[in-house]
Amino acid sequence: MSRITRLVLPALLALALATPATAQFSACVAGLRDEARESGVPGDLFDHVMRGVVPDPKIVELSEAQPEFVTPIWDYLASLVDAEKVADGQRFLKSYDRVLQDAEAKFSVDRHVILAVWGVESDYGRVAGRYWLPQSLSTLACTAPRRRDYFRSEFMAALKIVARGDLAPEKLRGSWAGAFGHTQFMPSTYLRLAVDGDGDGRRDLVDSIPDALFSTANFLRNSGWQPGATWGYEVLLPAGYDGPSGRTNRHPLARWVKLGVKRIDGDALKGSGPAALILPAGATGPAFLVFKNYDAAFSYNGATAYALAISFLSDRLNGHGGVLKTPWPTDDLGLSRAEKRELQRLLIKRGYDVGEPDGAIGAKTRAAISDIQRKIGMPADGRPGQRVLGALRGG
Image 1 (cartoon, one colour):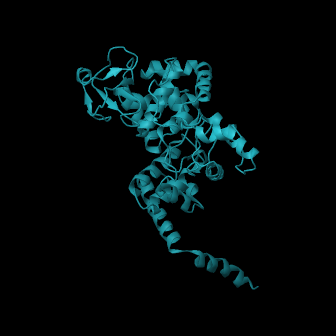
Image 2 (tube, rainbow, N blue to C red; image 1 turned 180 degrees about the vertical axis):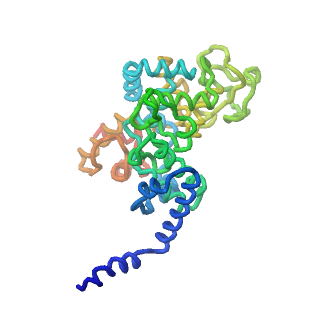
Image 3 (cartoon, rainbow, N blue to C red; image 1 turned 135 degrees about the horizontal axis):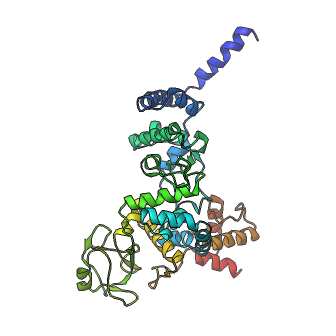
């Protein structure tokens, strides 16, 4: 091979491999570079971070895919608010007692709620995400079918975090959508609300637990947290209730009393300000009157189940019970993480390849569950529930 061929061949190969999609991505990244420089991010920093970055089709797939298995709320809460999560939280209450006390004093937010957010968002830092934000956010900003402007702004915010000196680029790992750190802040939220909790002059929600806990307290305070007030409580509805419900449908407590709503524990309805009635599983399941502090938890993720997980876990960490009196309307409750691991071990014992029994229910575990369900006459939906676990326990 001649010297000229050796020089030209790589360029020709690169040209042949340059698909319209990669060419579009490159053009988009060039535009992002110009925008970043205009917003104060040095060009050499941009080039360093984005060197070799290519779009990841998996990110777009995750952003567009409908969940293959819809998670009932009783499954969601069984896994997120289980005995392990409570026990771990109790230990962290002791080991980070001073940090949590200081955060509570500074921001007037209950330490148990701060800790509950940490537990639900990343299992106290154990599961913070594996996607590299410069790649995932640039992929979404340049190739996603929807919300490109939103992800473009989050990409810029991630670069600004690096430019400020808070984090090195390699620390920017999180969810496919860009949330990262112990308590899963989006980059724009990080810029707006992250605070220095350990006094080192940096805001590091990845390697500094004090920074993460202080920042979470700051988020909740800015979301309207009311110190000393309840998030809400379980209530009992009158038979055949068909009155108002929904998080934004708020009324004075006197209205709820008139409608026949009662506290499940028999106490009088009380709380600060108007309340909303939420029915996460319909009128036949548990019902709750919720107040401003429920909204603060809701604002963190924007989902009813999530806000209830934070609320239930904080209650249990605070020793306030957290056990529902009204059962969920199902004959097949969800599994805790310990029960999921047991389920996987029982499947392995029967010869199924489900990988490590880690409690994470992936495609292999679901396929094995579906096969077992078919054999015992259950709907083969691959759902890990108490019925299939009970069947496996019974041999």
